[in-house]
Length: 341
Image (tube, rainbow, N blue to C red; front, side, top):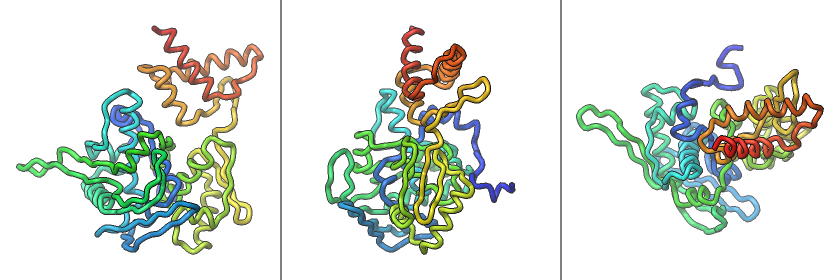
């Protein structure tokens, strides 16, 4: 299949991700509030109208800046920042609302090209994030307040005076978003999130990740899904987009199906699989972070291979596979680390 017609973008930096571990621990994180509610527009074209969303007791108004409302691709910067903060927090390193970074690290982290134009696009994204204003009652950190604020509280780009070379990029997260991070109101995203081509695919994945999570399945009506996506498309066009997801079946973590106007999500990692001589159960992304905490300093993927070999040895002896592989692996990591002392 031609690259432009494949459902997923190519992995543009397959080796770089190994080194970005130093930047963001290779664990992609997003806040639950923006996964639950349509804060970001799905259009790359400037949206300069105030967007209002109401659901239950939640009220959300998004006001654009000069370059329009921040879009779902601009959100990649916040995901990058949240991932860095959570990595620092989990490792006991200092962290704050202020983030300094190198643009190339971000571009590789988010599976983007690294040409000169991509740096211009990054600057535009910071502009939209800084100027987009929210008025909302969405709770973060267990508190509900009606307040107005920006997604970030400023951004900066440092350049060398003599040659104009950029030496540092930076931003300061809003107190509202930082409060969510402090309260652990974040979820891990699949790395292939950044390979999804269409904004609606990213948004539907976020909703599935928030609501289906690690459950076997979850259902939602088409109209309600469209509302949660924040899509302004005609319902027939939105229906076609969801059907395309069903046909290609390329959404990370979840398989999507439709019966009438009921959309169903089924977890791809909820069942154990034993093929040939290998125990090939897929672990949840969150499990690897917990494993790092259980076995600090160890390469959890190396430990995982030891665990799988240990499980296969038990199976060869006629024993049953673990009922909860994720918990079993974390327990194995904890014992592994204790034995190596």
